[in-house]
Length: 298
Image (tube, rainbow, N blue to C red; front, top):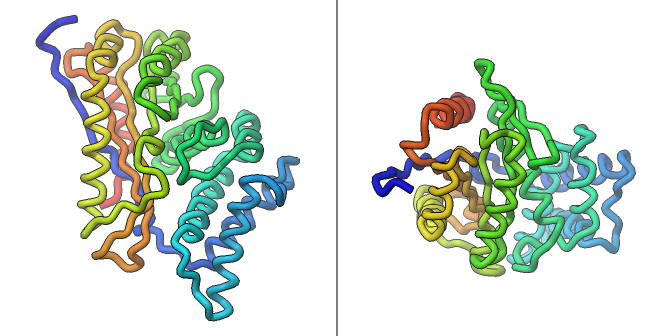
């Protein structure tokens, strides 16, 4: 590997919870649409399931608010927000036949997002979350196995693969990265390995920050620190043409003192590559950034 390679990273700005304020009634309506869509597709969120329990927390929060007894239980608020997050991801994907297996995993798995246990459903949610992010910015993203997601890049650049990996421990990163590279093999390296770091953040914890920017900067720092810890491995793969780079995402619930409401969900995405990776990766990464930046919010 050349010693003079230069990292290149770009912050990809997401739409944070504070940019889409929702009342409890609106959250319940959203969850209700997801609940009915799952029933219609033969994948109900049963009452005794983890997902059914999460959806019920959103219902409870709204009932208490309507009755004039707003809940002071922050855990219920966090779980209702988790329910809303899952509902959005499910509604975005459910009409794609290829999403069926991922959604099945969500309905059958432990979906307590605040805990730090591995879950096939949480793995699947990361695929749905990333697809929702990409499609929300105009990318023609679909489910594809392998790798996990596929984007059609503009200007006849063709299909672009994304292998999604949920990180539960630092010790698993090398193995997950190797699996991701194998998943990208049919694309001859034209793609990314996308890591979600939510489960590397503290369990059942609310990030406290004075401003939204401060919260986003904190997450960006986590993303960059993760990249630096594994940089040599990532860099070798990029320079060998096995992938164009890595996508790193962190999402946490936060108490932002300077915002109303103060309870938010903050997401930070970082796209990393190597400046000397070559013409092909540079063009493809540029095209992907162009899609996302074209719909970037001020």
